[in-house]
Image (cartoon, rainbow, N blue to C red; front, side, top):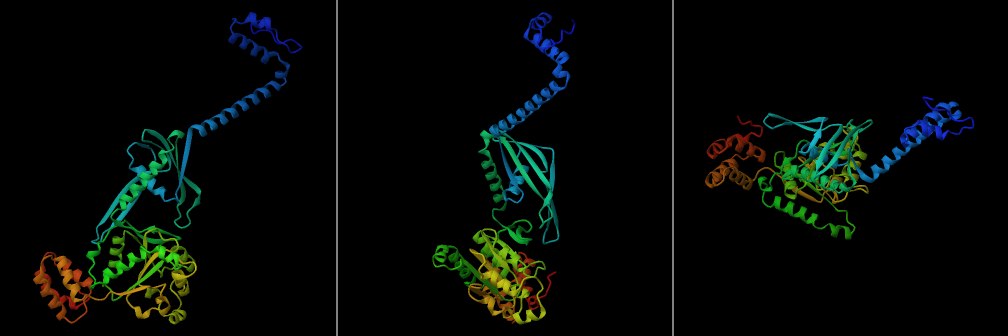
Length: 449
């Protein structure tokens, strides 16, 4: 027969016929055998053979899948970075600047900066977007997969949760640590020599704007010994953590700077943070959505090496009786603030600075030691400050400085350091012009033009 004989009635096969009708090779004989089975075997005719064949193919497919998974586990390794981890933004920034990168999916990040003079600077950064990317790092190829969850979102910002998954050969797994360390160093370098200002955003602290250049401590002119005494006290506190712990004393320190507006309280705190290489966390107690629980949570989760700044503490709470009659402007109660400062759940290892223009309006309870441990009056400019500020703007002009001081003190009115700075900035490199304009300091609201 052209197509060969079917199997015998008992289901056996005619081997002689298969051998004679094939070309003698093993491949040809296998083909003739398969043909006999498919054409005449009663089991296949009844569908049993097809079931067996399908089961065999399914088992083969399952074996291939299991084998590929085993091979994947043996040869490849994954690293997942969730968007809530600090290294997430570090890695995206590092990857956007990595030269050996192949990306077809990009996202734009816009930095909008408005300067004090009204000018606006806009900077666009292209970072890897959701999708697959390939990079080559130290000779090893890595697959980077950025995924965005469509179901889970961050309730504080409304943005979806994301993950970045890095895949490479198992032998190159040690490169993950090197890569993350490089990303961290790049982020630290970008903030080197700068002070990061944090503000509360929901239950967490987030950087506010771009890092600011550190302000040097000598650039802030306070009255004699005030600056040096505060710095000495802060450094002594920082160097005696063991002493506090051994005696069971809460390791925290509170400072109150009080005095008229424009006297340099906030400027000094910014310069102190730069001197200590600390950041600043600004808390607005008048925020409408701030509650006692959220305040406690934020104060117990301050970023490391940060100063907590509570500005104009008197504006949030006046006398306790008056507050009880008129109610609070925010969800924070006075007792909630006191507990956050030194209660059972208050934070440890913190440096808190509070400022006020009206210390007489503060409730005595907030001035208790443990909440305020050090008070300093930052007043209007003294003769010492006027002279030192003049020499800072006009170095070497000693005689002109003496004349400026005499005329300024002769006005007989309080002069803030902010007024002096405004006058000196207006009269750049012109000490004689500054002396001529001394009478304008008599009006605290004078605008130089």
